Image 1: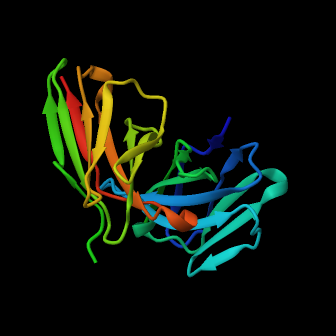
Image 2: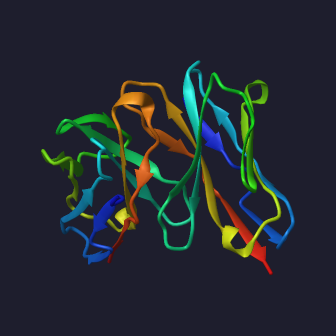
Length: 115
Length: 113
């Protein structure tokens, strides 16, 4: 069975603090994809990153960085110098390498950044 | 470049009624997936369409059905609505080839009373 766990329900930080959102996944597949999506109050899921299971390189994009560790089945997301506009619900998702990919989502982490 | 669009934005229905939600994929995309997101939860996969056929289905009853048209747009139909069907329904589009990421629309908020 495939499962994504986001143990942090809600995180509150003050602007300019760094924050890490945790994601742990379970799958027996050897080939899979991991995603992070942002869901602002408007409701639309915004794609942030995709990682495939063969690429364990960490990635940095501006203030965002991702740490993929296959050994611990984790794909954590760090926001450096958080801003109020980062306030949203963040979802980690697992995509399986079947012929047609469906996503299995975690329950999300609500991030509140206050000024 | 138009993104994924969905209609209507909001919908209120009564138990037992039927509803149809619509989705137009991002330009160039040929695969459409539908997800149900209950309040405070992550999206749950309903089904996926490619070449006008249902290719994958999640753990949803037959009351949930869909269709994809030749222009790649899609509809989600739900029959015999239950109170528990109240949720945000998200449509996502992607490219069949290359295992591309899925791009989501703004969703349709369905309330069943």
